[in-house]
Length: 211
Image (tube, rainbow, N blue to C red; front, side, top):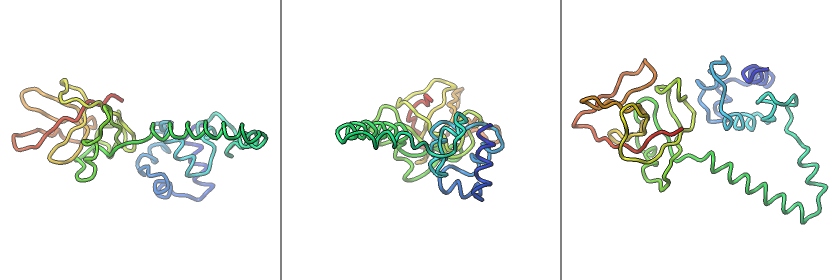
């Protein structure tokens, strides 16, 4: 059974709308709608977020388990251990959780549409050589979708045709960098027009999108 079918069935069973799921998960309604229409499947981190919001087994949503219930076998084993071994298991699990959280962290958002203004400029002050950002909008579909997390490598220049993160007039945006006489910031989604830079624009290249 596909992810889309499983999610449809669960929402129907729980009498939950796409809007309600969006509020619980922080994932946009448009992205959830595309999952349900089987346009594309979610990335692993999104499946875990949805499973947690619906109190379901991630393995079931992935389609590798027939049980919707969260597996209790680990807890059963843990309860049979003596205190010393329980402490070791707890320390290991806590370490794994911290690693997982760090993998999912992001420092702000980047527009895939009009540049985001204000507090979303946070990635500029990050000390990391690579920075993770939450995509907001659909101008870079079908490569990047609303709700995806992208990683960019800090660098002040880009080659023609590379996808980068930019600050444009105080806002952060992700576009394809095009330089042929003039400089253009190009969307992958054809419904958006190119942004043609002028001398009046305040423009900075933050870095190159690497995944």
